[in-house]
Image 1 (tube, rainbow, N blue to C red):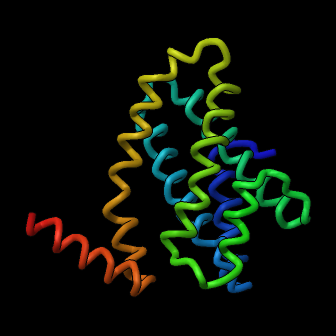
Image 2 (image 1 turned 90 degrees about the vertical axis):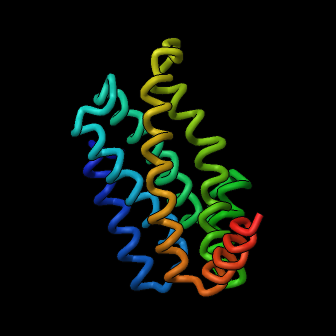
Length: 171
């Protein structure tokens, strides 16, 4: 169990460092997740949310879902098929970094986030809407920087961005 948002960041950083040592591609998602969590922590500390304490609790509950899935995978005991596919995808270079990130984001956002929100908000779900929308806006600001960093790591993604981007600009 994680005690606070700083401990979530520390745990993600440890995963990143271990992934680097082991040459484990699952570290890409952990690094992205760390970046997102740092950004949310800074927004909480900057008073950008109506209820910063609840948003920290949401962040922790959400992270616990990822930590549990990863621990279960490492123990060979992961039953959630979507997470299993995501972790399996990191075991080879067959998928691009972007594909690996997207396949991991799928269960984390589409399943884990809903569970974390329900646990934290309980019957008072509507009161979370404003802060939830603020998180979505904050996350959107990270997209250009993360996209650029992925391009720096992945020649394939770089070429795709340049080709697709150039074609979109022509239209």
